[in-house]
Amino acid sequence: MPERFPASLQQKIEDRLRYYEDLGISLFYMDRGPGSATLVATEPIAPASSSAPVTEETVLPKPTPKPSSAKVAPVAPPSPLVVPPTGPSLFETMDKVKDETLLKIREDLGECTRCKLHKGRNKIVFGDGNPKAQLVFVGEGPGADEDAQGLPFVGRAGKLLTQMIEAMGLQRKDVYICNVVKCRPPENRAPEPDEVAACSPFLMRQIDSIQPKVIVCLGATAAKTILNTTRGISQFRGEWLEWRGYKLMATYHPAYLLRNPPAKADVWKDLQKVMAELGLQLPKKSKS
Ligand code: URA
Image (cartoon, rainbow, N blue to C red; front, top):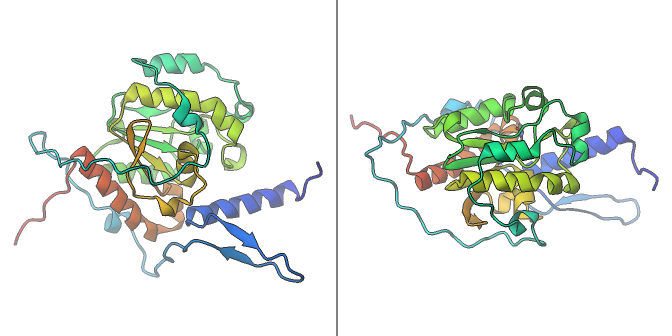
């Protein structure tokens, strides 16, 4: 089949569409009438950047972790899945494997060549953190820094994720961080279905080995891939979902927050729900 666009233009279009998707605009249609080509967004655009600089300090206050004697906040019953899947999900269908260690799963993965992403990778980014974490973050796929180091979220977006984790009163070593795919997609494009299909059993096994209390999907690609939905992330971001028996929430990707700092306020609201679920508390303001 002939290519419709040169590869570089195709890439630019894909990047732009992904950027819109991060803004919560997932559906476009074109009026193909003579002489007109209108791009229509069918979902509201996230708030525009304010002119005042927004720092992480102002939107991500630093709490102290709750003392071990503190009462765990009451856990709300899980709400029903509000994101109807658009087909059978690879992620839902796999049976749970009992009592596996992350080490065993890493050994089974080996020097993986199951999909085409292995051709361009430097290092497999398996995942990192506490093998018994209560909180797992799932991103999209490694970028250049992660590919070079073999660790997830170590670039600019990763530094912001670390700040977000610390704002929750946790440290990176307390949580587990991984991605939908373990090898860097070329030019940081979104992982393709065959790549997700090859990699997903390992992600499932990792999650089932960790048995977290909460999973947070970072960004539209991770959320939509895992939940198998075409809905825009803005429609279900911050909602508690039930997925494979785990409580799951989707929020914006830190890379999106780097481009759109005002959206940090939304993410912080989401993370506060996660904190409540995990019994983590913000410091009380002293009365003066
Ligand atoms: N973005 C991701 O989705 N994952 C990473 O590991 C790094 C950046």
